[in-house]
Length: 347
Image 1 (cartoon, rainbow, N blue to C red):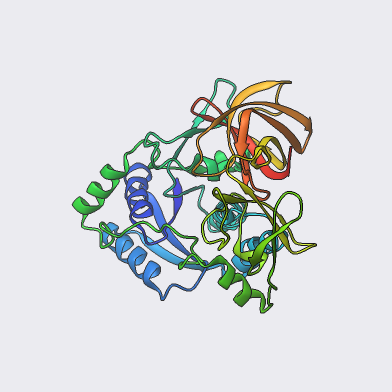
Image 2 (cartoon, one colour):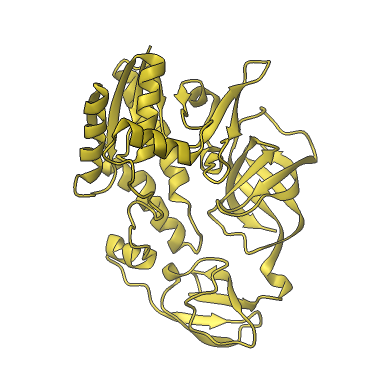
């Protein structure tokens, strides 16, 4: 069996390639070019492949990445939402186009350096489980994986601790063994989302008004693309208590700010669409679970009802501060991902 390993040039995908070579024998590395990085990722990935004595190829997906990921990222920000481009990249690129490329090239499986586990239940259904190293778990950004994709994907690091991965890379003498992990979106390495969007579109985004719940003007914002729901830093508006972004209205170019103790900051639930279910074909009524509405947020007890083939109504047990349109709501049953969808409404 032949497996194609997605190699970003980092330590995680490099150790994944080693483990795949040990487990499958026939193994090859491939680096996707998604954004310009000066060739560093390709250089490091190629070096690792040479040390493992496996082949390496480069796949230029910049045009597709621009169309499927970056453009959608920009569109969501322009509409007042907060996107998660890593989820869309996984959907369209890493487990979409990369998998299609692997199949066309004669590889039966693909592998990545994600921290998650894939299992099968007694019925043969594939399940997505959290990683052993919960501090590195990436199951949230993988909820969109379908049964067709899960059956031909490997996550070799799902049962490992990050510290063990780094130690193994050092033992193997990989050039990237001590390379730090990226903390930013790959195409916005400096974290200046607003500046990137303005440069990408060539458009100017006019200043507007910060307002309170009654519409009273509190100050001036520098353009809606510079803000996200729940933001409290960098607002430049003084108040008797901390102020948070509650609502972004692109039609009126206003941003509503509320104090931290205002009940209006908390939502009792969300509606999610573009739904993918992993653990089952359809949810039972009043399904009890836990949900994450942001990647780094803790799971929240909730009740989920599937109101249609492509709609989930998720009601929190308590109020949740500032869930954001465009983010994903991912449902968990213990260590397993039930499924999820993109937040399209706040309730």
